Length: 443
Image (cartoon, rainbow, N blue to C red; front, side, top):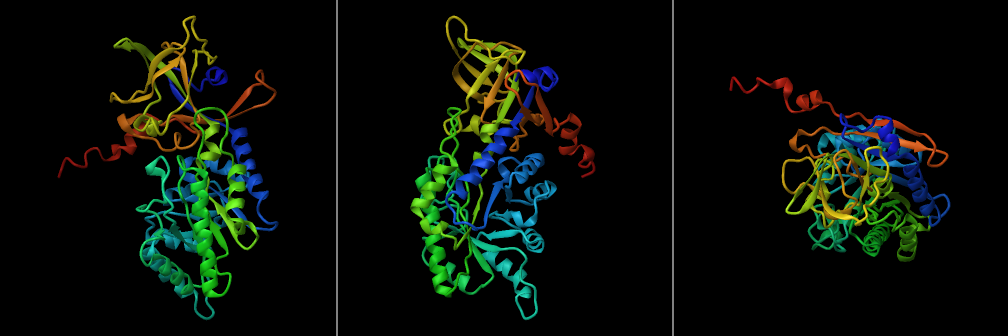
């Protein structure tokens, strides 16, 4: 924090900034690889594909690619980002409940793995693949699969639970006739070689996630028995490891989950199936911090309020669903040094954002050292989603994001590298139709 102030990354002209700990991201990637290496049979093909929606930033995707992590994409934009980061098509997986014909065609031609979401999408793949399956034709260059919803239930955050009875994702496996249709779909398509399931993420307990993986595994076994061969050769088990936002402790860990899967679905790791994971938040959340300047300190009804430059435009989920997405807040002075608590202890106060509505609070009645104008607040554990899911309310500019590294302890110089430049006002005007200012005048 001190280095960000000293090197001019934050100040009166740039009152909010995103910071990413490069060493922390590398460590998380290494922990993920090691956790699954411990449980899979030697020689098993494993692709850990980062969910791009968690941090749609090209330098982050390149960093993860250098650490052996591919990309899971869910839109043409995310695919373009992965390709811009230099991720090879064979290390990209395309998931989305609304893929267009053009998206499917591009993915098939590039050799990207595709998980079809529903029978209609599978029919679109039929039209793309059948010309490649006749005598002398070239088979699809990339693996193709089907997503199923095991309908094992939801976690504590309904919006992030993707295996409920009525989830929009995948083929609902427990619906009448659905399982039989899935088995038949594979028997009729020798080129369909993957099965995908994803139970959810934040708020989902590990045993629920493991139950979803077990359901997918059991279905794969049934399908392979029905066709009389190992047609399904890879299981995509999704991702979504919950993150502890209450402290610095990383819990649960990848090893916890991998060991639970080994106990729950031992056949998953015996070497017969390749494996794909799609973790996002857990790889990067702990490595990110939003640092924002306190513009004003005031009070209302006897409660102190610190008005900062980090609110709903960055911490959208926290502002609109604080019970599900609470964030820790740390207080610093204007030099970036930890702010001491006064003699009377922490002061309950609101930490407000800049958006023009009353509910724009990242923390309400939170005990903190009393914040004053010019101080800084840090929103911790914000590396995932908070940097790439900007809410454009009030046309507030997207902040600059910088990766950092430091060696040699607290006295070492911190080195920053730009990840994304601060958005300019000219860019906001262009994005908001500035080039077409007179377009409606003649209508």
